[in-house]
Length: 227
Length: 227
DNA sequence: CATAATTTTTAGCTTGTGCTAAAATATATC
DNA sequence: GATATATTTTAGCACAAGCTAAAAATTATG
Ligand SMILES: [Mn+2]
Ligand SMILES: [Mn+2]
Ligand SMILES: [Mn+2]
Ligand SMILES: [Mn+2]
Image 1: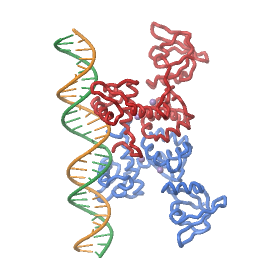
Image 2: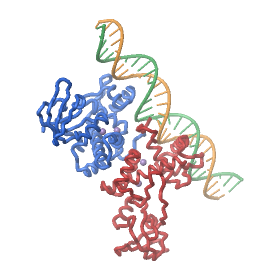
Image 3: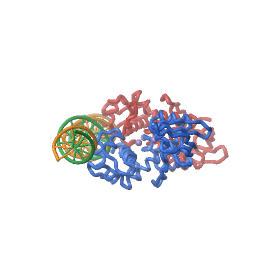
């Protein structure tokens, strides 16, 4: 009886929930290896093996030794519920408590395990039922379904194309800060003015006519849809 | 490494924090017995004995066996930090997420352990730095000081007195609901019209001229100050 | 394909926090 | 003051979740 604030029906522990989210994040539909999970959670590989056994026992993952783990239907549903909470919380922190992009994620990583479903749905209502979080990531619905993402990396766009930023990959804080300052955030409309094969540099122009030049690594973390 | 979301400096576990709050709540300044703590937390007495040893080790309580425990300076500060978080969260849930008085406490009991100090201070700002929560309980300041309560139970008021409700003891949900419906909430001004020694029944009149009659148990859970 | 490197598992241990049953101590009652 | 009752502690155990070191299995390389 640990970490579990016994509250009516079962309730998964914080660790359990973080493992499910890690398998979801790392295994993208398919299966996740011990190593990948271990690195994602900063936990020893042996600890992962141990937990995978337990998660299978609980019916949350399918696991074959030496062969990796994938989420069961139930595990997937739990993972997406977590993701919904995480992204709604991040939206609230940014829009109403004045958090910066850097500060948001760490707080959400803890709060996601503490809020009830009631809290989550009231918060969603309060926020106007947003479909995306401020990074542009889709927020799963309460029933565990999630909008399919059509976006491609800006790096793959062709010169002359008109696109709209749909998501900015939440990599490093510096990158997020940089994009934030120049207004390169989800929803922004751009025209691709130049794509240089040589070094992967891409130039775009925003609606105010400002030009931005992005090196290959940056161009790969901005995802766009045709506009 | 359990329940503790290692996050920069130390951080106490959920259990540790709940014990400190229990000792504070039950020992009201003085010391708390094993039994009292055990009942307050719904935990076996043996578990309390065990934890008190550990809390002393950590310098959070003073404890002599068979003699009860009291908070050290550090323990007291931690307890009040928790209470601040708890009450600010309750205020938010009631005023902005449409929670009822019943629902509020359980959610706050979990969230208080998950929110950072940054969150807490941003929330306080967002709420306009309230000095009381919606029950009328004072909210400790960030530095761990708390306004002294001058209130007496309504049961001890004399006929003819003019008073203001300062606090409603958060006993049962039904009682809270009852008070809520009749507008008997903190801030309300009343005139005591009758006090009957016989059965402890007290009659009051509110500013709109409505009369309310309260039996002894109810009159003991409403706290008032002279107006 | 044999060997080297990498990944994964097993075995055994630790810590935090809970439990029950029995023993010890403190408090109340005759 | 002796004895009964209530409270508290001790002893021994369990379980979740982590760790390290060694063994086993898989994958890569010459
Ligand atoms: Mn995040
Ligand atoms: Mn998390
Ligand atoms: Mn409360
Ligand atoms: Mn709590």
